[in-house]
Image (spheres, rainbow, N blue to C red):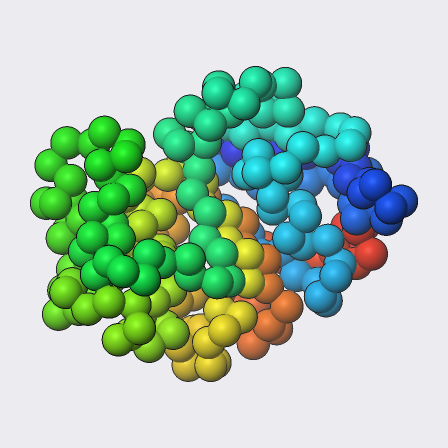
Length: 219
């Protein structure tokens, strides 16, 4: 299997001297459902943001699908990210004034996709949200909002999906349903996943677990 994510001696040091990441070397292979586990403040979010190109490392390299994204300019990076990567956050960041369907349509329209409405409806059906398409976010449960956020990510057909504590605001049963969805997407669509969580109850869903503590991979 090819290396989809690779970090080489990745450091992140903030202006106050805080060393959030200390020489991270990580490889995630094509088709893996990989968990990134560690306590709060261990560096999980920082690592995901660097891998997604949402932040720049102090030192080291990030390779995605064989491309060195740390050497890309902002415009090239934005285009590469749009075509290959999706990011699911702990907080759903849905547009409160728009309904479920519109939250997906906006993503597709901004990306210039064809048959946007058809694609959005297919995704919402897949996510078992077809009866919620006219609901606004404040009319949904936490689990439903997270599924909408995942649906929005799927509009661009990503090869890699990164998720930062995606069940952090959900109860265990809702969290399991989200992870079952990730497992299904991994198996049926071949999406490579790197998911940060500190919830050990969900570890059974992963093919492999990478652990981080104090900015260092511990295994």
